[in-house]
Amino acid sequence: MYNPVAEIHLGRLSRNLQKIRDQVGDALIMPVVKANAYGHGSITIARKLQDENVGYLAVFTMGEALELRQNGITTPILLFSRLTPDMLEPAVENNLTVNISWPNDFDTLTSFVADKGKGPKVHLKVDTGMSRLGVAFDEAADILERLAKTPQIELEGIYSHFATADEGDLTYAHLQIDRFNEVVTLAGKMKLNVKYFHMANSGAVLNLPDSLFNLVRVGMLLYGAYPSDETSESIKVEPVMNFKGPIVTVRKVAAGTPVSYGSVYVPDKDCNIGVIQTGFADGLPRNWYENGYVGFKGEQFPIAGRICMDQMMVNFGDVVPKEGEEVLFFGDEGETQIRIEDIAREVNLTTYVLMTAIGGRTRREFVED
Ligand SMILES: Cc1ncc(COP(=O)(O)O)c(C=O)c1O
Image 1 (cartoon, rainbow, N blue to C red):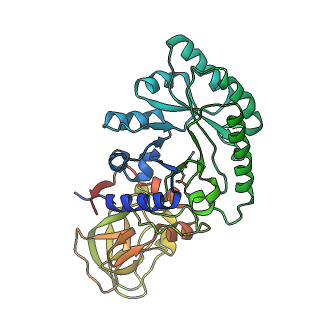
Image 2: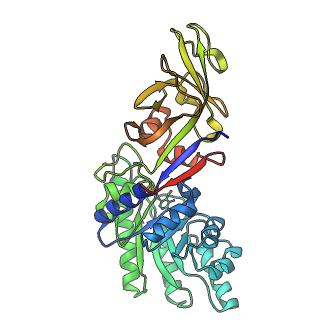
Image 3: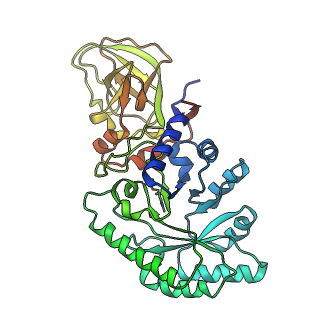
């Protein structure tokens, strides 16, 4: 049975974690394992990170958090998504930390606590410039005062999120840091007993050393890729995933014979065309065919014609691969390396979009190295 394969190297994950630890010093690392750990398989990734004694994990939805709890993950988990009343009971039962990210989330929490006598731990999200979730930074004083008067709500953290931490021009990111510092000072003045202040993501870990506070929320860098080509690559990470596809047939094609939809690819020499059982439904960006290539035994071979839904073709020239052998789409397989960052740049997407597009038909194989 043929499938695309995501080979997940847990040793590389551990080494990336160690390098990030070395960089951020005393700050706690909160690995972000939402969206199936960016396509890497959240349960196994979370187990490995738990074994590595990370102090916190982050997901987006309640469903993601419960899946981790049901699979033996006991590490504290923060949920990023907007709070709804139905999240509160499972949060308490499963020791999950929720957000206050809008003023009336405070009311949702207080009425739950009044009713049940106990609520979940809370992190207050302050919007310092992303204009997504978060209490407006100039309204933070008001909500902090209300929290100060409500000790039944355990405010464990205050956080914010960058809009431009992975860009070349960091002016706006610095404005966000200044605003966040004002909130931190305010919380200090109100003697709120807040354990964690956090705003750094991968881009900030690389670009903004004054944004680390005492916790960093890191996804992309842990998975061994860079958030954009405008961040420094001062931390040398290894790609955790090798994304590969099986060669299912190889046919001889005469010069001048069109290959794939639209007949836009016509080889000018006789060649061996391999059919690879991986397509855009498996997360390969369809327009990667224009300049795209795959790796095979230390060499690169061009993608031949439009990527189809489930399959794609590769021009192997004179080389005759065997059925069942695999090509590398991205990752690092000894002498064959293809950077996901290069594909992202070529197809005008981000590494985030490419990783999280790898879906259900891909078999994940976890290896220790
Ligand atoms: C709120 C929040 N924090 C942290 C992260 C991690 O970002 P990165 O993968 O760039 O480290 C994300 C990811 O999207 C996020 O939404």
